[in-house]
Amino acid sequence: MRAIWCTEYQDPAGLSIATVPRPVPALGEVLVRVHAAAVGFVDLLIAGGRYQVKPPLPFAPGSELAGEIVAIGPGVEGHHLGQRVIGWGFTGAYADYAAVAAAGLTPLPDSLSFEDAAGFRINYGTAYHGLVDRGRAVAGETLLVLGAAGAVGAAAVQVGKALGLRVIAAASSPEKREFALHLGADDVVDYTAPGWRDDLKAKAGPRGLDLVFDTVGGDYAEPAFRTLGWGGRHLVVGFAAGRIPALPYNLALLKGAELVGVDFARFGNIHQLEKARANAALLFDWLAGGRLKSLPGEIVPFADFARAFTAVAGRKAVGRVVLKLA
Image (cartoon, rainbow, N blue to C red; front, top):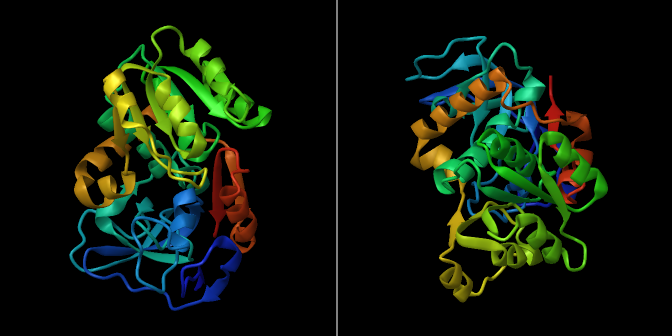
């Protein structure tokens, strides 16, 4: 089978498609014929050995796929051959076939295509877990999304609106800010502009921000944290800017504010699998009922994966990027 195969930790430029044996599902696993796989910033960090979890070599990167079950390993119940599913884990999605833990599967509604499904659980699941489970969002609060045109940030804009929040979207280009407004953001800011925090303060209003959903980090985290109001929550989701920021401790004291980690991978894969599945079921209900829309983006042929990886790594992508394998 074809797979993007890491025999060593490599950045996107060093990756290529190899021919490797098809995996055999072990105890508690199923074999999925992969039709589509999401490309996320985290996947590239994992391939490069720069994520908190380093999988053993060799491996195929890719954390979320959509496909159909073609074989069932021992000890698996509740799934059947031919079933359409979303599979999720740390690795394995960038291949024609993937052995996936049955505990990480979500049945795919018939109304959703493989391409639309790829990335749904991880993007919207991260947004919901961050805003609800970790951020305790309350309708009427004001949310700032840093990196609002990326896949996770764009999902946070939609989930925030579905929760009744006022959403300010921060993005780096007119195209990306227009995209965020199309998704439902109430206002936008250009966080690359000099003095952007003044614009943010004016749009946040006298009470300040209640929540920051931060996928970017870098130089943008501290101005956002300083704009929190009393009791605000700054949700640490990722570091797309490439630098992990350091924040003065006194800011949290003066604002009664919280710096809250959002690790959806370990939440959904290790610590709270049942809660993650319940969240996914709710989000699919919201999608079916029109409270969410499938995230726009680009569908890229598997053979052209380098272009997709470059766009995501360089923060040029708008919305989802999905590899089409079948």
